[in-house]
Length: 119
Image (cartoon, rainbow, N blue to C red):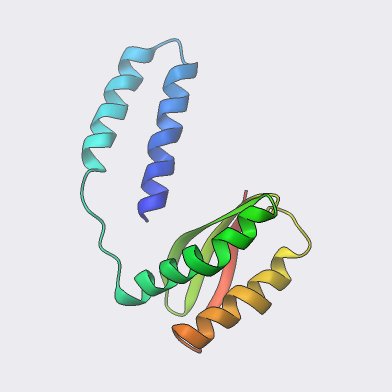
């Protein structure tokens, strides 16, 4: 969720810089930024998932020109964002199932299923 708010905020900045009416958009960005200063709390499972992604998965994915970030954990479904070389890569599904899902099943919860947002 924290990543989502940061991306939203960055998108608003981009839109503002491309628009001719910067005053109105700058004000909207300022209001949104003030709303986003609240601290987001993750559950223990979410923290464990994020830590595992950052420690084991992210470095390997980045070494191949991709990017992976935690998106959400709802029920038993972990959703990650895939970008760069990972987006649309035929190996992404096998990496999700064979690597990430297997790691999270062993370390966090045996019922976790991993899904990806590509883009």
